[in-house]
Every structure is written in structure tokens, then in C-alpha cells.
Length: 336
Image: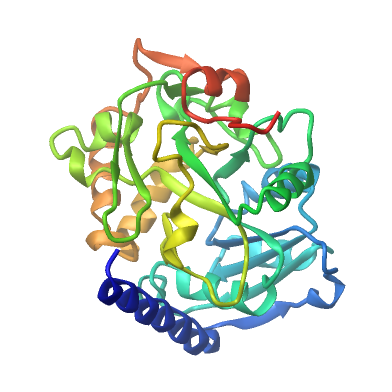
């Protein structure tokens, strides 16, 4: 990369950090327990709106993994989830009625909280419908992974977003609060993925899976990106650029081996397609607060109305992380 392009990226990173600093005024603290945080704590950051049915399992899942403290931005929920979060002893939560779209789809808020509280911590930034999976996650806590990353001088860890879905109509599989969503949405696409490299930021760009074949079959280039970098040893100088798809400085996006080897990577099990999906898609389409003039939710609304069954004869039933490694969807690299 040339000097001029590097300089432009430094300016862009400065811009996102300044923007995040200004957007802090959008946030009103509801429960601030950050005085409890210790220097070694693992932190999780998330934006949520009306995800009350998901939150009990989500918090328990990550508590069991070893997360010590949770940061939430609540974007004007009206389902009681804000009050529920405020009662959790390991949660700090802020609320806002500001535009999700004008906050760069929540990333200005996340960048601000990461800048202020995440410095020198390992931080997970995930949505309430994303369950992080990493090599040996069935036997080793998240701390084991971050200790290995520290020892290997690795600052960021990637995870492919893997869309999970039920067999049969989505609305025929009820889900209740506290339930493991994988009991309902236990199938995924083992193939049908394309990978390219972003020439500017250096990150991989992955597309495909059930959303591409069901909702973007005619326009696959518009399908949602599945590449994410959710786990970062944060520094206040860093900034997420586009969701958690890429970061600055650019080197944090180098989460793959360009010379044919394999670096350790994980998966985010994406449990969007529960029974509540149809209602949620209609709500978000009406709000028009999502990327690309909400074209993703326009496609969802149309696709679900016509055929809400994502299962096909090539679908695979989820077993464990080792299955995903065999399929090439994640890697343990040289972490043995």
C-alpha cells in the first residue's frame, strides 16, 4: 500500500473516532456498573432493540464462556428489555432514541463505548442473535483463547457468520425466552460461499448461504456480508469501519494467511431465523433504519411471504465446532 493511501486511512480512522466522540451525546446511562470492571476482564458490546426474548439465553451463553461484563446500547425498545438489562448485575446499559441509521447502524455508539471502556481489554462485539464459536469452545473457556492470542501477539480474531435455520416453515417452530435457539434453528448451508479480498482495507469479503440463495438469488452481489472480526484486543486508537466487517488500523483485518496456510478462526452462529423473524422483518422494514435503504429487509419481507422455508436437500444439521472445521468454515490453525 502506498504512502498516500495509508495517510487517507489514518485520516478515515481519525474521522470515525471523532464521530464516535460526538455521538456519545446520543446515549443516556440507565445502569452504569463500569466501576466493577477489572483490568483482566473480558468484555462484550452489543446494540439491541426489542430483543427481550433472546437476551436471557444470550447473556447466559456468554457468561458460561467467560465474559465478565456486558455493555448494551438500547435503541428505544418498548418490550421491557431495557428494564430487564438494567437489573442484571454484570450489565451496563445506555439507551437512546437517536437514529440507528445516522449512527452508522450503531457503530458510532459501539466505537465510543469501546474507546472509553474497552482499552487494553479483549472485547467481543456481537449482536443478540449471534453466538460466538471458536476452536475447542466445548472444553476451553474464552480466556484460554485470548491467552493464546496474547502469547502469539495476535490482536484480532475473525469469525464467519453462519446463518442457522429450522427445517420447515420458520413460523412453525416456536421459541421461548431462555431456550437455546439452536434447538429450533439447527440447520445451515455447508457450501455456496464466495470469498474475495477488499483491496482497500485488506479484509476478506464472504457472501452466500441461505440468505443469498433465498433472498438474493437474482442479485448475489447484494447479499449480506458474512465476514466479521468480533474479537479484538482493543486499543482506544482503533475503530470499526463497517459493522464488525473491518477495522482500522488496516493490519487488524489480516486475520488470514495469504501464503496458503491457515490461521485460527471461529464462527458466529446467526440465529436470526426464529419464529419472530417475520414480525421483526416487517418492523425493521417499516423503520427504514438499515443499510442500503433497507434493501436487505425488503428482500426478507418479500422472500418470507413467498416461501418461509430455508431448508433444502443440501442443508446440514449442526453438531459441533469440529464439524464446522471439517467443512472448512472455521480453523484451529496452530492452536492445539
